[in-house]
Amino acid sequence: MARFQFDPNRVNYALSPTGREYNLRLLQRAQPIFTQLLNLLPSNYISAVQGPNYSNELKAVAVELARLELALEDVDRDRCFETTRPEFLYSIVGYFLLLNGRVPQMEFSDVAFRDLLINLIRIYFQGSVPESMTDVVKLLLSGNVQLTENFLLIRRNTGAYDISDQFGFDLAIETGGVFPPDVFSKDQLVRQLLDILRPAHTLYRLRFVFRDEYIPTYGEVLDAMRWHLASYYYDDFRAYCGGVRDLDRLGRKTNQQVVAEDHSADF
Image (cartoon, rainbow, N blue to C red; front, side, top):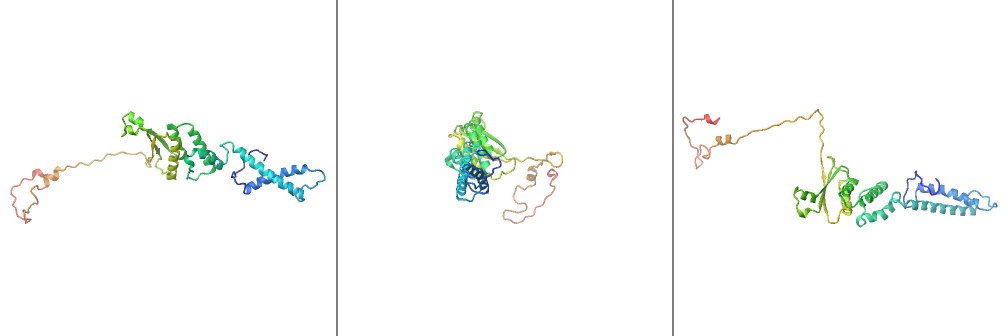
């Protein structure tokens, strides 16, 4: 790869100059430098390979110059936050954006963490507007996000709010009936980002709304109505209001003779 040019095949962007990939790049960069240093020598120095003392010294100089060039290439890419290494990206950008320097507890890859901070910068410069609140939630949670401002409900005389609730808003996330993975850690991070972007005088409530979608498997859905009619008057007619039938006040059974009693109205 040409010097001071980005290698698209590179996969290791760690701060520590170690590893097999780094050693290979260091060797490839040091070899042409070593050849150029040998070409600067007078003609009586005929060694073209590492062996004599002077060639060993030139080889050590070439390795250090190659190490310096690789470091300068990384520093050059660190000038833009879209290409800088994740360690610098957090220490420079994340430290100022994340409140009190709190590191997110979720596990992010280097690319995912970079994308998160870049989108956070974009949302931050939108200002503390409702669109920014919903965009923050959409960074981490999928689904339909609806924001409801309390003062609008108070103005329309809807909802159980009064003037004391005017500086609040609700964020409802419709999950489609599927519980989001890592929902508790994502909920904590969303609240952390909302504390950065929301207006300081506002309060919010974050809710997860589960909505199931019914897909019939056997043709159309047929609606049917079923009703049951009951009347307590019938039971009242069958009851004996004088107490327990055929028992006197002392609990002893008494015989009563029933003659010519009309039961036609009981049915």
